[in-house]
Length: 206
Image (cartoon, rainbow, N blue to C red; front, side, top):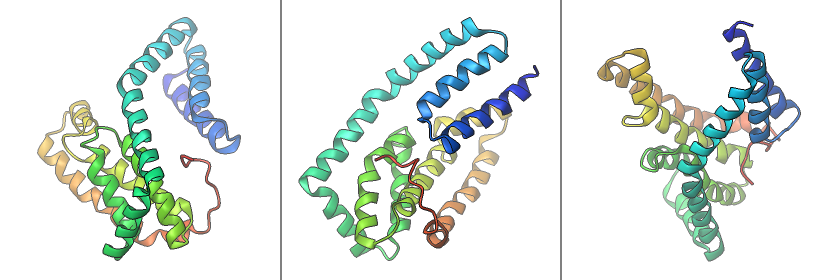
């Protein structure tokens, strides 16, 4: 089977398993990885690639994400999360935009947009309760900022890798990045009305 067909089939299966059947993303990725290896005719090397890949990911991010989770739990238990939420509401005219900026500013220094999301997700829950907004609105605002920063701001590894793969000059590449970054605060400003119609919380970290 052609590699492009296998690629799109794998994407479709991941979306189907996670969105339609609500299978955990980790299990979905493992199952689809094995299925992709079988279609490519290399089942044995696929198992080896999966174990090496998981080992690499865990060695790089497991401790960082665990520490971020512990920080969030400590802030929650000591009342610090409530204080932060109160300050955001008091000093910001648009709390969702403030959350978006939190994710944007902390994603690159932490070198992981997932870690920025994990650290600040308790704040999004507190803000959602204070503002009587759906949790999906506050969580999406945070996620958009974190993803935009990590994927579009130099010296993020994503930007450097993308520029290298495309053989693009960093100056021109960064100018387009700079323009694209303005989309996300605008989306956060105008998105609450649409997100309030959604009831699904399947992809939020509980």
